[in-house]
Length: 307
Image (cartoon, rainbow, N blue to C red; front, side):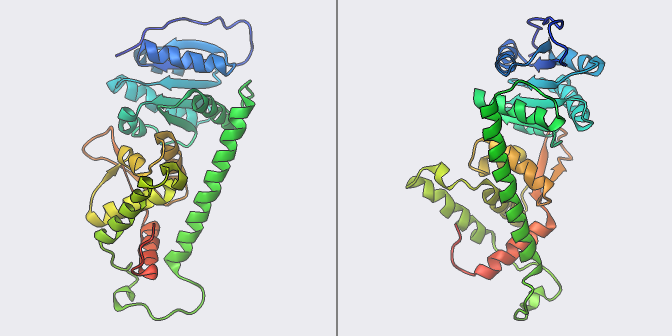
């Protein structure tokens, strides 16, 4: 369903570039407007999916574009997402796409640029923080909540540090230790990764999930490792994993999972593959080096369960 513009805002009181808001419904539009106003931003115009692409292309200057998607806007929505992704990649403006869990696959199929913040069923604090983070990348000065920005920046620094640590560890495992090691099994002489059964990986995943029966689930949140294990299991079983399924496997809120996914792709651990049969879906798989490292890791630890 397309929205109808609820208001065109006065542009005369400030010389700062405005924010443009596009939405798929009136309710979505109202929610996006509340977030922008709460962040102290000037709203230039609100747009339907049918008009957003042309309006964005003709906008001389904009601080950011916010898309609020609570319904599948079909081809019109896809065109707007492509337009926003391309312009954000060129540094023309900051961009935030707020959507629902049901729309993760069609939206993520168009949005793969790290300059676009994608949030899913987010609360108001997360929405404000996403806008602050997106605009901080473009160097645009805005009156956004310092508390939200600081907290989000700290979380992202922690996320980046953790992913870097995992990437370095996997890289070391993929090439083996520098010190002389015992001769590898015959199957590995040709450089092939050690064989690994899908049952072994599933047992580890099952053991990790059992912890939530006895302790709060967020106490052991480790989305990077959970996603690595899920993709390894899928690779061995020769299954394809769409973005929405990987977010579920991460066992954290979808917005957090998407940020981890973005970082893991940028670190070279994950690879996005377009679905050849569905242009509105992408699959995620392990990069060859990450797969090799995980298999060597399991071979090194042997039989003990790793949770």
